[in-house]
Amino acid sequence: MRLLVLGTAAGGGVPQWNCACPGCAAARAEPGWRRRHASIAVEAGEGRWYVVNATPDIGEQIEECAALRPGPARRATPVAGVILTDAELDHTLGLPRLREAPSLRVVATATVRTALSEGLRLDRVLAPYAGLTWTELPEKEGEALDGGPLEVQGIRVSGKRPRYAADLEETGGGAWVVALRVRDRRDGKVVVYAPALAAWPDELDRALHDADCVFVDGTFWDDEEPRRSGFSGRSSTEMGHLPIMGPHGTVGRLAAVPGARRYYTHLNNTNPLVDPGADGHGLLAASGIEVARERAVIEL
Ligand code: MLT
Ligand code: MN
Ligand code: ZN
Image 1: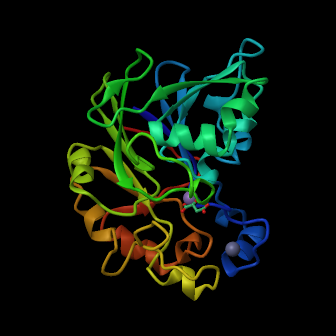
Image 2 (image 1 turned 60 degrees about the vertical axis):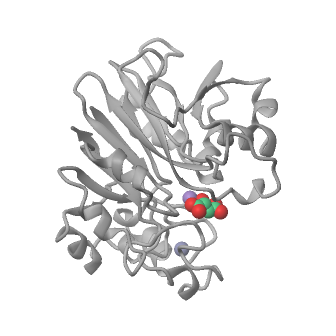
């Protein structure tokens, strides 16, 4: 299995356009601090890739990864489609950026599809450009994607809706946020990608039992970070993100996942870990955990 890390930041990125917090300010001066919106790509066969979550940076993210650039035919793209873990704007605004394609395959739960179709009206807006071809992300068990080598499955990890979908009628039983599990039939390798975790259900542990690589919500270092940094009145947990440290912290659960490469991703620009020299990196390393690196190529 081959993976590309396309970005590792939460909504806004690092730096965020309207933010002069220490992390964003440092990222303007130091390229090593910069992080694009969180996303990975998974290889689905020779020269075919699925991108997981379509971020506002998707155009640059494709250009920055040689494997995702078009060619050799003039309009041939290795990007076979997009898999969505949720309907948040930082994970879906990239879809309109891909409108130059004749059609776009999007894999998502019925709930996420409804949010995008009814809440953002994406089908109607994009229809004159690129028609969206929807595939439902299965939740019960992994199912082959596209008749190719990848099996995909969503595991519910949060019922938190995007703010724009607050009043939307719900379909699909509330699968607003899932962890994505992908198994490659060619080598049996498994990756689990969970950039937003409001809870750590037993189903997630089951999905992780044979994982070779895991990406977990690293939005906030601790529960008070959003309030302390003054941009929200809500705690990390109240915002739908289990923090890394503290009583609800994920670090112990992640450290306990046996035999997998373990990464945090989706870092908010207030997270002290955006500093490459922060003490927190050493603390995580002691538990066998790293912050995912921008543009990393991961071979499992
Ligand atoms: C999240 O990760 O919770 C969302 O991206 C936040 C938001 O955009 O409101
Ligand atoms: Mn987000
Ligand atoms: Zn900032």
